Length: 266
Image (cartoon, rainbow, N blue to C red; front, side, top):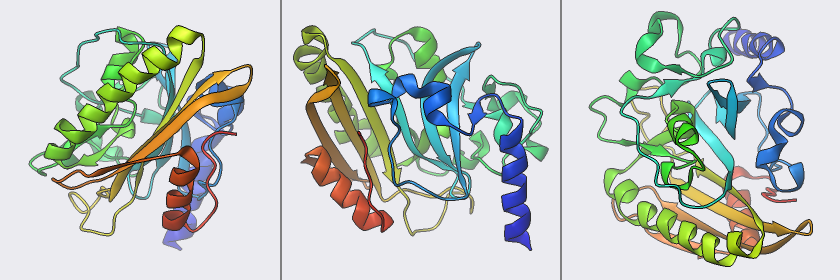
C-alpha cells in the first residue's frame, strides 16, 4: 500500500507542475545534444526538472526521489565566466508540493515539516562528513545566475570531501580548459551530462543515498555530429580515483551498474 500511495503522489505532483515536467525534450531540450535526453534511466521514482531560477531555465536534472539524489544533470558549456559561489542552497518546491512555485526556493526559507519527502534538505547534510557535490558545477556555469542555480540540492549528492575538492575539482578544470580550446573556439556547441551511481552503504541521515561513483561525459556538436566526445568515472572515496573513458566505454560501465542499456548522446 505504501508503494502504491508513493507512486500515486508522484503522479499527482507531476500533473500540474511547471518546472517538474513530463517531457524533458519538449520543455528544456536545449540542454541535450540534438535535443535528445539520455536514454535508459527509467524508474517510477525519477522526476524531470527544468532547473529554474528567477523564471529562467539554466540546466536540466533527472532526479531520483527515492534515493534523494540526482541521476544526472545536463547543461551547455560556453566557456569560463569566473562566477562566484553562493553560501546557501535551494530546493525544488514542486517535488513535495503540487502548488509550489516554478522557481527553486532557498531550503532555509521553506516549511520543512511538509517538504523533503521526495528530496534532500540542507539539514540532511549537517555534520554528515560529506560535501554537497555539484553535478552541474559552478565552474562551468555560463552566467552568475546560472552559477547561483547550480546551488540546488537537486543538483547535488553526498561526495567525499577529498574527492570533491581534489581529483574531481581538477577534472572539472581540465575539462573546461580542454573544451574551450578544442570545441568552443572551433564553433562547436558543447553538451555535458554529469551523474552519479547510487551506492549500497548507509544513507546520510537515513535518507540520502551516498553514490559509489560520479561520472561525466561531453559531446562537441557541429553539423549535428559529435565531433569530439569523452567521458570519465571516479570512485566516491577519499582516494577519488578517476578513469578516463570514451563515451561508449562509459555507457558500458553504466549498463553494468544499472542492468540496462544507457545512451548518453543520440
